[in-house]
Length: 376
Image (cartoon, rainbow, N blue to C red):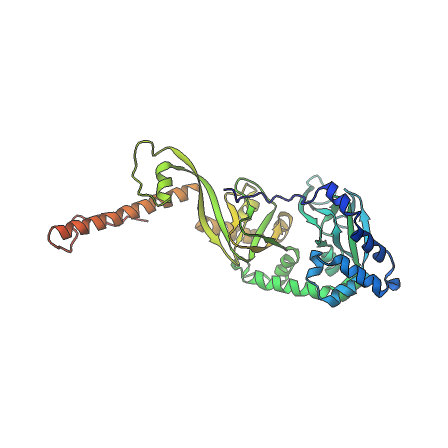
C-alpha cells in the first residue's frame, strides 16, 4: 500500500526553485553564448554551449555531431510564468526545448467559437522536454496551446535547421513507434496512415519500479501502452473475512464473524510488453477501477485523452470494451473467483481424505461416495 503514489500531472520544481536556477552561473554562460547570432559564434561559444546542455534530457539522445550542429544554430527566448508560447490552430515554424522551467499543454475540444469548446491541460513539460515538432512535420498548424507554468528559458530551433539536423532522428523514432503499435492486436486492421497519425501524438514516459501509473478511484488523462517492462494490476476490494482468508491461502472455514468486511488489495494480473491499460476510464469517462503499479522499471507510450478521442475510432473503442468485458474482473468476478478457488480446494481435500480412508479400510482404490468436481 505504501508503494502506491499519485502520478497526476504536477510540477516537480517550485516557482522559487526555478527563479533561483535562472540566476546561476551556468545559465549566465549559456545566455552569453546563445545571445550571439549563429554566424558570430566562435568555437569557444560552441564549447560553452555543449557544456551547458550536458545532462539536459533532450540532448542526451543526440549524437555529438547533432549536439554541435544545434549549438551552432539554436537561439533562445525567455518567458515569465503564465505566458503563451503558441496557441492551438496557429501556424508554427519553431521547435522548442525547455532548458529551465515548465510548460502546460492545453488542448481544445470542439469547434473554436462554439459553445461546446472545452480546454483541458493534457500534460506538463519540464526541464529537458521538447515540443512543437508536429507542426514542423505536417501542415504547420499547432495542435495544442502551450503556456509557461514558471519563468522559463526555451531553446529554439527553426524549421530549416530542424529538418536538417533533427527530422531524421524523429522519423526514426516515429518508425519505431509505428512498428510497435502494429503488433498490438486492436490496431491489426488499421490503415498505415491512421496508425502513423497515432504514432505522431503518443509520447514516451519512464517509471521506476513500484511507481503507481494509474490509481483506482481517480481519473487521469492518458491511456498507456507498455513498451518495456511489466506492471501489476491491483484492485481494492471489500471482502468478507472468510474470503480474505481463502485469498491468503489459509485453511478457511466459515464461522461466526466470517462475514465481517475486510478491505483488501488483490493482485489481478500482470501486464507486459504490447499490453495496454487506462482505456476504460477514457471510454466510459469514469474513475479507474484498478491501480497499475510498475513491477520493474517501465517505459510506456502515453496517449492523451484529447488524442484518444480524436484518433481512436468508435469501432476500436468497442473492441476494447468487448475485450475488457471478456477478460477483466470486477468486484463480483473477484469474489466468484475466490469462491471457486475455495470449492476446488475443498474438493481436493475430500479426495485426499477419501483416499486415506480407503487405504485404512483395506487398500481399496475406488473412492466410494466421493463428490464430483465443482463446476468452475
